[in-house]
Amino acid sequence: GRRLEGKIAVCTAAGQGIGRRVAERFLEEGARVYATDLDAEKLKGLNTLGEVDTAVLDVTDGRAVGSYMKTVDTPDILFNCAGFVHHGTVLDCDDKDWDFSFDLNVTSMHRTISALLPRMLENGGGSIINMSSAASSIKAAPNRYVYMTTKAAVIGLTRSIAIDFIRKGIRCNAICPGTIESPSLEARISALGEEVGGVEKARAMFVERQPIGRIGTPDEIADLAVYLGSDESRFTTGTTQVIDGGWSL
Ligand code: NAD
Image 1: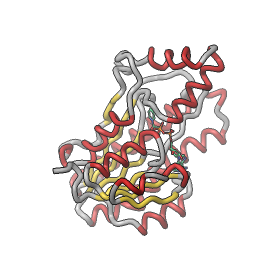
Image 2: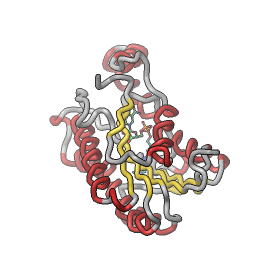
Image 3: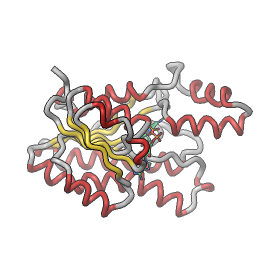
Image 4: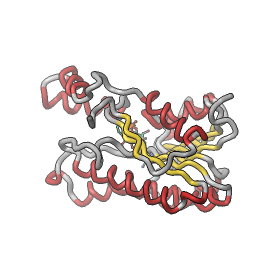
């Protein structure tokens, strides 16, 4: 049978990149999916793939998150994927950059979990999957000052949820990828290309930092997300699942 048959999933940032592929794979594995994103355009095409409801949801809008979550059926899986990569050191990060990154990368998860956890508890539990990164408390990367700080916070948040509700059927795990193909990665490669004299050179630099010799794919992250969402991972909670082509070795 399909691995998520009968389950309901809520996903943020499902419009493109990793979030998109995870939402598609959840559907392929038999889940009913609430796929949300900031950008309505990016959600197009998801509707045809199975039992999916798409909705525009800005996870930095606390009121919108609260009211949207009231409209969804209680999920078995909550996948918090929304996040943004700020480029630079502490000297490039003003208060506005800092607040924006924390709001989008961390507070968003506080909002979705606060809104859904009471009903998930009533339901007997569920699996919460939070998108962190190897670039966090795990692996230092240059020019990722506030990004690393937020993604380390996601690991702390994940472990806190895991320990507080471990006897109540809630599992909470973090996914910590290395470099993964996505539209925003392409944008980062183009930007670096302008600095180093060519997009191909920039791409080679991203490949070079992955000891496995290539960039990962959204499908590889989706394999892990399906596992964490399914009952196959029923003894796994509070973990930081590193999936980085050996970057942190
Ligand atoms: P991406 O950055 O290409 O796409 C991000 C998606 O998030 C877009 O569809 C965008 O519309 C949506 N979004 C932006 N702001 C939003 C908001 N306020 N509310 C709701 N949705 C919003 O996708 P990606 O590169 O696959 O990144 C997805 C997640 O994975 C992020 O949390 C990112 O930090 C994390 N991650 C990515 C990589 C990588 O190399 N791609 C590595 C590690 C972690």
